[in-house]
Image (cartoon, rainbow, N blue to C red):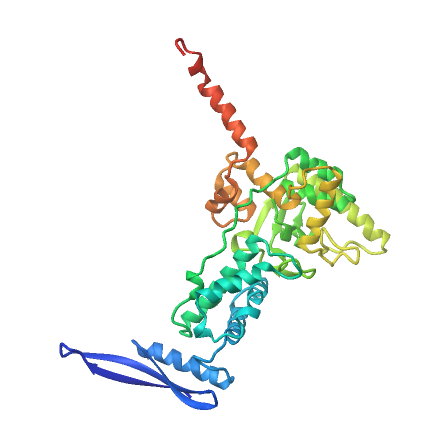
Length: 390
């Protein structure tokens, strides 16, 4: 049981200094030992006492003998109470890659060299397949977050992951399809739903998870709106995913106005789905997914499964292999409208809370844009070369 006491000392100048002590005991090497930690305020000391009492009740060493694995278990449990399930699963996967190398070490004895060595070993991967640079970067970031929480809770004095060298990640240039390539992929799709999926991604800029979660109840033909208020979350490359109401972020919950092209596309798709339901001897449910598995109208696809469908259409259309069919279509939607509509409207359509996010992601010039800029400059300034004496 931890306790708190006040200690007053006399400074050299004659003034008094108040310190608060947190005392507790723990078993180390079979012996019961007393521990003490000093704080500047009573509240800090009381918080420490509460933590140590809770750890003691669960049989976990409070300080020197706590292992990294024990801290990770506590950290993940705390994250589960405040973070999204997909985020916790992401943490669990990434921290699990360094756990075999750090789990047995005492938390307070982990240094920069241990962190760098663990990340290096994790990068080697398993089965001879090294991790991608971005995955290694994520492993380091999650480890830094985990040890940062240990410092916040005063389980360690410093965060060694902050001083460890983070792996560099080359920035990948988004390879978005051209409008002609989007049309070609749609024409080459194996089935009508995949064709609709590709065109809808290009015409609305919706995310993969939003497309996977889209139901007919969210499509209002009378008012010509699409309501985006849910997303299918998928951690890593797992085959399982979960539906989460509320979309990706607060700004992601939005309405998308239906253009005439989108309305015609969705009406044709609904007619196709109604015929499919009739052939099955049922009526099309109002809450059926627009893009569902063959097992039923209420069984959604995972985002990665939708990407695989679109990728097959891309390959069948002989479109460049580096093109990302669905996320790339969203990128093409954004870059095509950048500068055509106000940033605030484009951000709202894409589900961004802040227009600065939209500009930061999509304002990067592509080759076509760079050549268009050069042509415009030539038209505006090329006359300088035709002046006398030039």
